[in-house]
Structures are given as C-alpha cells and as structure tokens.
Length: 326
Image 1 (cartoon, rainbow, N blue to C red):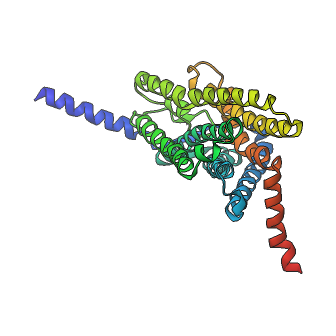
Image 2 (image 1 turned 90 degrees about the vertical axis):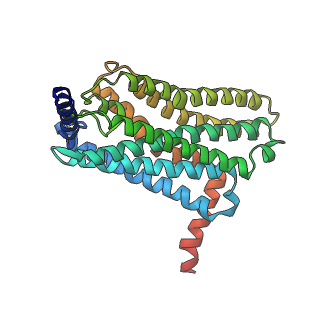
Image 3 (image 1 turned 30 degrees about the horizontal axis):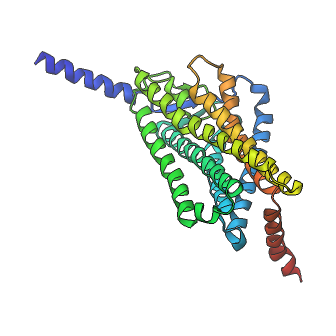
C-alpha cells in the first residue's frame, strides 16, 4: 500500500510540475527600454516589406504561365515559407516591443515553436533543392529537362514540406513533454527550442543529443551539399566561353549562395551552440538574422536581379493599373 501511495504521490507531483506553468513571459530586448519604440518601428517596417515582397513573388509566379518552371516554382514555395516564417514570429515580437510585459500562453508557445521548426526545417531542405536545380541547369543543361521534370520537382517540394512537418512534430512534442515548474521567463524574442529548453525542470541530456544530431542532418548536411554543388557550378561557369553568360550565371548563383550562407550559418550557430556558448543578446541577434533578414532579403536577392521576374512584374502592373485607365 505504501509503495502504491508513494507512486501515486510521485505521479501527482509530476502532473503538478507540468501544469504549474500556464504561461511564459517573453523578455525580448527588455533590458534596453529606451530603444523599445525605435525597435518597434524598425521591425514593423521590416515585417511589412517582407510580407509585401514575398506576396508579390507568389502572385506574379501564380499569374504568369511563363514562370511555371521549376526554378520559379521553387522560388514561389520559398516565398510561402518566408512569409509564413515572418508571420509566426513578427506579430508576437511587435507586441513584446509595444508592452512592458509580454505573456504567451503555454499552448501559444507550443504552437509558435511548432511552426518555427516547421517553416525553418522546410526552408533548409527547400534551399537544398533549389541548389540542386541550379546545379542541374548549369552543369548538365542538356539533361536538365529529364533531371528536373515535373515529377522530380513535386517530389522535392513534398519532401521538403513533409520533412519540416516531421521535424516540428517530433521536436515540439518532446520539448513540451518536459515539466515546466518555474521560472517562466524566456530570455529570447520567441519560443525557440534552445530558449524554452533552458526552463525545463528535468534532465534534457537525451533530447540535446537528439537535437544536436538532428541539427547536423537538417542544417549542416544540406549546407555542405549546397557548397559542393556551387563549387561544381563555379568551375562550370569559369569554362563558359561567353562573358555575358558567365557573368549572369555567376550573379544568380552568388545571390543564392549569399542567402543560403546567412540562413544556414546563423541557424547552425543557434542550434549547435552549447548552453553557455553565447550571451542571450548574441543569441537573439543570430535568431533575427535567419528569421527576419533572410525572409526580407530573399525577394530582393531572387527577384530584383532577375530580368524575367521584372518583366512579369511590369506586365502585371500594366494589366492592373494602365489598362483600366485607358
């Protein structure tokens, strides 16, 4: 009887521990109170530009049949991911900047972490697929129609999204299976895994091993494959006889590689770092790099430098604005 009583009391204590935290407090940049209004204005502009830029890419590619090829359809998927990524993080962050104390419910924090992992994981694989597409188009142009046919494109996109869903589901459920018994202050801009995990009232060693292994497979492996692909692309570009064609191909790939390096570099530093590796403020800045700057820069990098996207945008503008006035 006494053993059963002790077991029952232990289970009750676990349940109490797990339910003792019903909400979290997002600290954001609260240690710089004098900058809150300025930060709110800056990030509001970034958010609006990100939404508008990615939305324009999605609409243009949807409406222009000439852009219904793998290169631009990959870009359309990337814009969907970036727009969604920003929508998950930015509204809550703006609330943090506009109020003295920002709380987020236990369920809300769970949902935010899930979608951060979903869209972040999907983008990791999607950028890899886009690099493979450019590798096939530049290094093996004659075989490209066979290598990147409609079925291969669909499989790569589905693999990216499904992988993101699996990563988000496994990791989020595991993190929130730990008891949270206090404190409840998340010293970060959002409910990202490393920041939330610091508040768990349990031994997280096994999860950290899993997270480290998963990060290598999800972030570092695709990043290394992308670098190898672009190394091959660089050698192919240097062999091109036409200077104009060589400059165009190099410009396109350099833009993609810039975005890729920014995203993978800061994400890997965030998720592979030891607990005491960086100060909280450094962690927040690295998180801003891949969650805010990358979605903001991708439309600029992939679209404004692309002549076909410019032509499609002008065509859409003339159809919607010029024609009605005639």
